[in-house]
Image 1: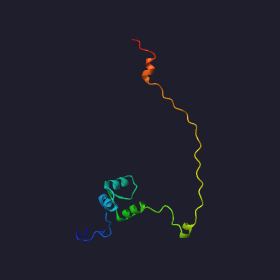
Image 2: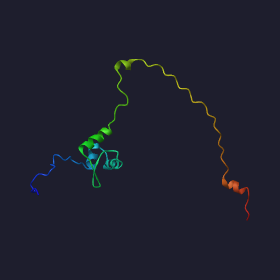
Image 3: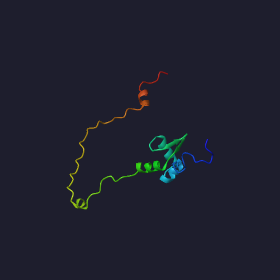
Length: 119
C-alpha cells in the first residue's frame, strides 16, 4: 500500500476543470436554466457527475461554435456589385378564386319557438 504522501496516479493538472451550469451561463450570457435544459435535451455537450451536469472547457468551446452565426451569403466582388441588375418583371396578381357566400343560421331560440311548447 503506497504512503498517503505519494502522488496519485492522476495529478490535478491532468484532470480537466469542470464548470457548473451557473458558470457556463455567466460565460455565455444566458440563464442557468437554459444550460440545464439544453443539456437535459442533449442539445449541447456535457458530462454527468451523479445527477449534476458539468462542463469542461472543450464543451464550452463546442457550445460556442454550435451557436455561432455565419454570414448568409458569400461576399460579392466589388466589380460584380457595380454591374446593373436586369429589371425584374412585376408579379401578376393571383387568379381570383370563386368563394361561396356563407349564411348564418337562425338562433336556436328562434328555431325552438316555431314548434311551441306542450305546456
